[in-house]
Length: 320
Ligand SMILES: Nc1ncnc2c1ncn2[C@@H]1O[C@H](COP(=O)(O)OP(=O)(O)OP(=O)(O)O)[C@@H](O)[C@H]1O
Image (tube, rainbow, N blue to C red):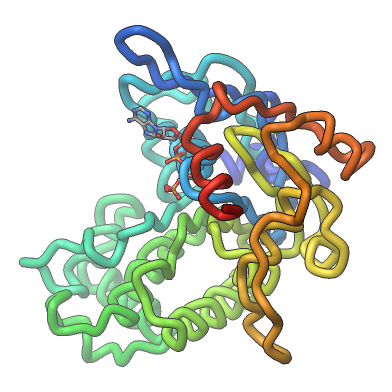
């Protein structure tokens, strides 16, 4: 029995993260990559985690999946899935948790398909190993899965190199939802694809989510995509969440100046062309007082340049 079957109550959030802190240990000092991050995702909700490269998004995803390895360490906080303590799961529970409860599509997932196995054999493997189905039943389900992501089931016999990038990514997404997880984590799922294919994949994910009802943790630095896909989102900066709100509110009225800057840096996917902007004039993100003044009541993450040199450099670069 999976964690979701045993303990997902109708009103419990599917995922609940409280004060999660993750550090990477260095020779002389540690870097706090994720700093007291809290958020929860409801059943059937698409929740987004946005923020520039290096702000800690993937570290959170890997912490949820219990994939963090040395020198990373969870220094505090909790991760609960359907009421169960993810950080306390044993080896066997973890094996089930990873495919049946939560599945993740990584940034470069389409390149992680086994090049010497057909797509069909790779999907069949999931069913035989994790669900105990016979090969015949697994093949039948593999064909159904490909149809679900609008790939001709004849492609079961294809090798990854015989598929386009978009098809490979759709196949990976199909694999992720094979065992009907309650939560799908998508870490920059379309970064390597062109804009048209990106749109197709996003529409597909929405469609799948609608049909299968899973929750989604969608990770991207692309605010336009994020606003389009997610119901609610958190914006991260330097390891901390600076703003959490409904995505449509972030779209129409971002409160935090860093969110405003991120929104201004991406062209909208639909509607008229608008000029892109960097950081708002006069806002210095190293200056905590400016941030507090610009977003009273919404500033939750004091950030100092020495805490997050990488983010600081990026921000300075965006606003010469
Ligand atoms: N193995 C590691 N050792 C040391 N520091 C690391 C390691 N992996 C990540 N970091 C640091 O942790 C911080 C967060 O990285 P993370 O990959 O989670 O960010 P991200 O927002 O997902 O960025 P990206 O979109 O580029 O993947 C960064 O400052 C990064 O340099």
